[in-house]
Every structure is written in structure tokens, then in C-alpha cells.
Image 1: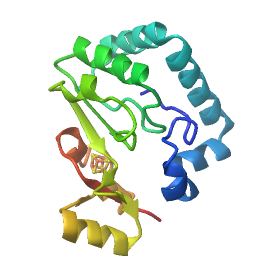
Image 2: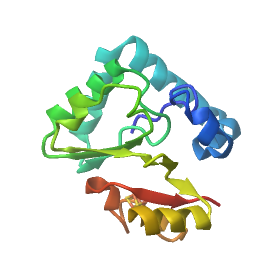
Image 3: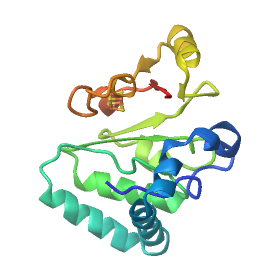
Image 4: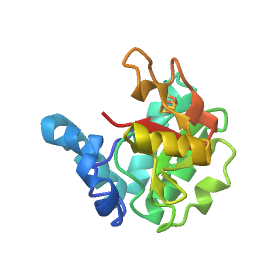
Length: 177
Ligand code: SF4
């Protein structure tokens, strides 16, 4: 995985809708190592994309994982970074890639959208953010058929172990605590 800094890599419009409740930002404030790791990843991805691609390709060649989530924190921050992940995903047609983004309205995702092995999930569901309290989640389920992430409601449920919904589907929704 290649986690990136929250806020710094997120689209500007996120300020109004999710900065206040961002779990990824909280992790950076609590754990300095997390902040440093993400900052290094961002620096490499933005200033040395070829090296970032090489590092990820080498790591994935060694890995037996069949499913890969590029950045569990942060977001696509420019078109070069999108192309970098398209290059990586093309190297591994046998693996599945998935990730969420709020940057669909502001960047060019064509390089990823045309790949069969990359599931790009829009974190905005018809203008509504895909996490929130029980009332918000209920609305997303009723109005848009959203799927409630089991790991967000039960600490004993583990992503990629008990649930693989996001590997191939859209519109997951996350209960905020
Ligand atoms: S819906 Fe399933 S696959 Fe998606 S984040 Fe939640 S536990 Fe993971």
C-alpha cells in the first residue's frame, strides 16, 4: 500500500464536506510515524514518479496478495499520479486493484477507467459523501442502494477477509463513530 497525506492530497472541495471528520487526518495527528510515511510517499510520487512506480512494482512482484488497494489514505492529487497507478496496474493484469476517490470531478481518470483490473469507486454518491451517521447511511441505502461496510459497524469484521465488496462494486457506505 502507498498511503498519502490526508488533506494535502484531497480535492479542495473536501474541506467543506469531510475534513472535520476525516479518520485519516486523525491518524496523522496521533502517530508521527504515520505522518512521516505518508509524507515520504507523497514526495516520491510527486517528484519522482518513475521511482514510485518501480518501488511499487518490485513490492508487488514479491507479494502473493491478489488484491491491492493503492492508497488507503489520501487521494489522487494530479494526473501524473493517476497515470503512475495505471502503469503499475497494467503490469499485473492478474491482480485486482481498487480504491476510492473524491477527485473524479477534478482530474482525468481515463487511464484507470479503461483498465479491467482497476475498480475506481466514487466516494461521492450523487453529491452525498459516502460516510456519516446512521441516518445518513439509511438515506444512502434507501435512495441509492448503498452497501453498508460491515467493518465500519463491527470491529470483529475485517476488510478483505470477511468482506470483498469493494473489489468489484461501487457505492459502499461507512458508518461514522
Ligand atoms: S465494504 Fe467490505 S471491502 Fe469495502 S471497505 Fe468495507 S469491509 Fe472492505
